[in-house]
Amino acid sequence: MAGRPRGGLAPPFTSHWTLRFSTSARPRLTVIPLCSDAHRDSRYTLSPSVMGDVLVNTITVADAVSTAVRHLPSGLGPVTSGAA
Image 1: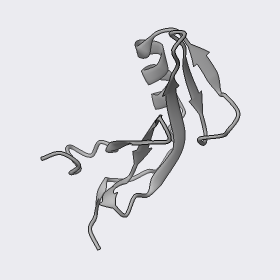
Image 2: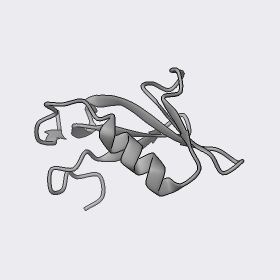
Image 3: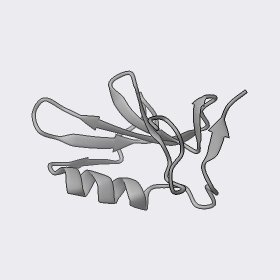
Image 4: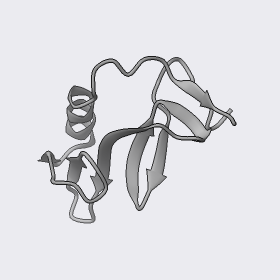
């Protein structure tokens, strides 16, 4: 079912045209401080927040994903339900 935690993966969501991740499902997101943006000029950027400094510019999706994985904070724990 869409929007439910599966297999301990951080569920993705979009916010302000940015791909973000959370350790919980909606409606109560626990946001991981990592944003990925796809740009019209075929670049992908990774930053710690929507308006944060760019950590890296990449030109392939594979590079963007591997960079995002390396920048995930340690000790995230399992994904939880965001139910009230």
